[in-house]
Structures are given as structure tokens and as C-alpha cells.
Image (cartoon, rainbow, N blue to C red):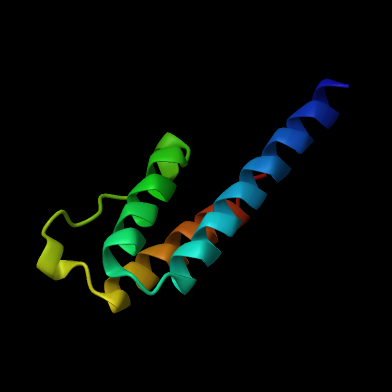
Length: 79
């Protein structure tokens, strides 16, 4: 029973983070995209959290997509 509950929690966590990543990728407004990125990073497990640039001029679409890709890979590797 505990293993089933644990698997459900992991599946829900994955689903939530992956949906937020998709929302972030599709967000045309850069300010909202940055907010989503910070939100995603804040709900990640501590070992998976990334140090994200805090200088707004460095937060380009390319940078954000690179970070999202790293987060996605980390989330998919959670057992």
C-alpha cells in the first residue's frame, strides 16, 4: 500500500511539473514565462533545483528553454 501511494505521489509530481514546463514553453509573455520558470524550480525536489540567473537581461528564451530541458530530464529520472 505504501509503495502504491509513493508511486502515485511521484506520478502526480511528474505530471504537475511536466505540465508547468509545457505551459512555460508555450507562454509568449516573457515576464510570465520567467515567473513560471521560478515557480517550477521552487517546487522541484531540493537536489533537482537549479541556480537560475537572476539578471533579467540574461533570461532569454534560449536560456529558459535550456533550463526547462534540464528540469524535464531531472523530473523524468525520478524513480
